[in-house]
Length: 423
Image (cartoon, rainbow, N blue to C red; front, side, top):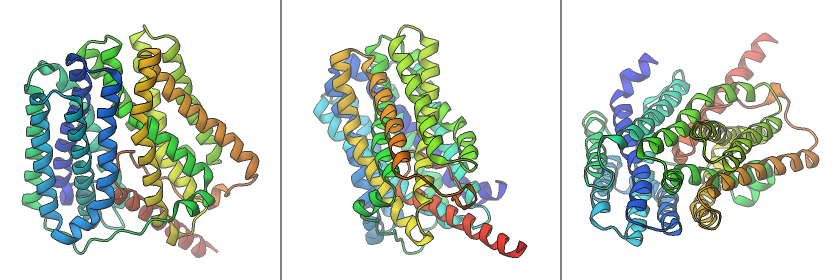
């Protein structure tokens, strides 16, 4: 861990500040939209813009980097993010905000691709897992801290937007002043969706449904809090509970996943998250219950992302894992685009509690499809032959997912070599 910090501290510090800015703007828009009297449907369209841009950026960023280099892409996208953050309060129009969210989603996706390729290049085989874990912790810590900055100024003013813009702007200083461009950039061509669904129907369908869950909790949780009449302090605590759960439950679920049939774990974890969402839907007036539900929803849905990748890998050869990761990220992104719009419609029809019902229904669908798939594929990979679980967050770019795939492959090869030595 110390070695990783010694070689990548500037990158990790910069990513921490970037996540503070990103986490702050996402929640802040949900609160400010209520102040500006935007409808729930309008806010859902605004929030979906981020995922449209993110999906587009993850596809286009590699070619941009190959054409002009890491440093120029990084600096240009950072400048655009800062500019859009300042413009939000100046142009209080839902359509303008949607365009802004598309731009910010595109830019953050490109920034992640660039930063994660730097991280991958600086890591060695010996510390690759530590670097991935530390990167995930830094990301979550930045988002959690951002939620508590909400109470430091009036959400109806300019200050918090300026803070988010400044955090993003200064985040690039330590990175650009201490890191040289990486060697030639390349990514693996994704496996076709038809092939991916054929290899692991549960992995593909689960990823699509999880996209909607992630988009709801990361894009619409603050909108829910505003519509439900929570104070700014309560909204910040509620949203942070989702991210804290995502961080703390990642490793216990990952540890269990390497020791049992992953289909059963996928079903069980999804059922737990769905039950938490349904409980919050049925009992809407208990703030402690809402936060507990947020913790469990975040703590189950985020590990599910990495769990579905690991499950899909169980049916792949090493050479196909990287290609499959691109397809899984794309499927998840498509689900994420539609998530805010559907949950916005449900909140408009059923009230704020439609937020939790939407999440509960999607996770219940994962449970139902998982049970169905167990009747179609009677046997699965033995525990001894399963690939290792590696923590990956839902907001990861295809680069860090491929990075995790490298960790899977390296672990598998080491285990195979160790088994040969014993025999």
